[in-house]
Amino acid sequence: AHTNMSPVLCAIVDGFGVSCSPSNPASMSDAAASLAGYKPSGHTAFCPVLDVAPATFDTCASLWLQHDPNYALLGPEIKQASPGAFEAPVLFSQVGGSQTNAVHLYTTEDYLTLIRNTRGLCDDSGAIQPVRAAGVYDVSVGPLHCFMSGVPYDYWEQYLTIETFLLTTILYASLAAVAVACAFLACELLSLGWAATDALQGAVVGAILIAAAIAASVVSVVGLLGWVGVPLSGISAMSSLCAVGFATEFAVHITHAFLASGASAAAARAEAAMRSLFVPMLLAFLSSLLGILLLLATTFGFVLNYVFKPMICCLALTYFYGCVTLPLLLQALNCLMPKPPGASAADASKAASGATFAAPDASVKAGQMPVGEGGAARSVV
Picture 1 (cartoon, rainbow, N blue to C red):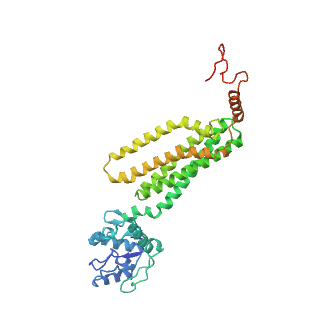
Picture 2 (picture 1 turned 45 degrees about the vertical axis):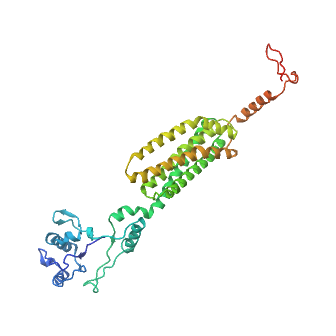
Picture 3 (picture 1 turned 45 degrees about the horizontal axis):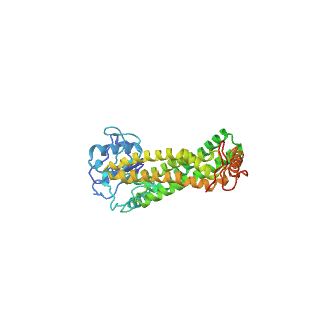
């Protein structure tokens, strides 16, 4: 625990035979004189606390550092301006060091329980009022402010807020991706000659479908990682964030090709989009898959569990939602998409062309094929 020491003098004499005698005795307060009373008392279970001036504390702490090996044992680690001289004023000291240990830490939840319990007594308590085991201190001492540190806090503290952090980060990333996709689609449709209202409608509907693909991908990746036994951590959370990027890449290309195909029928739009993008998307998926599969060559279990599994889940699910599910969704919701300019005339021309080929020739007798150029009618058996 770290405590702000000034003007508190703590653990300078704890029954170890060290007395605080500055070069100018007149500068010592009466409280410093009482410090000598702790020397023969044999108290080693508590820390004598004296209300002294910061300069007095600096002097006494320097003497403690120079003459008592227990300074290193307690590990206060007060910052030194030079060897043997503290940097004044002393702002904090570390208590415990390597002599303070925690036990029964087997799972992540054990570490979280340790952090919550100790922080509740130290960091989050506002201020600590020192209490002597045998009663009150010789003088009134103000509250001490402290905070916990160490490996359990430096690493496992991320798990206290990992879920909130992941949700917030994914939400912001998804909103940014959807906003950029909407602007891109609107500009692209306007450049193709679409009316402003139609371009805006198509961009908004397309952006909503892209958001749906991103949401489905992220939820599936997080859920599948839990199912295959990958615990949520800062590293595995990155794959969930990568799912936003992969899903956006697949979804934006498919949606853009669907809207800009020039057709108005749902099936024709989907066919045109996949005809132009199926092979590039498949090759992009396979190239990324090949790079991830190379991780199987490692013998480091951490890489397999926290990197390979999350990345393979991310790639497979985003490809599925972007290149399989999204085209079906676009066809089903084609009624919400505005028709491209000239689609009515093209559809009418296609319909007229189909009617011409379908109309029977009145001059052809029943059971005969129509007469070709320079040919005769043939009977059909």
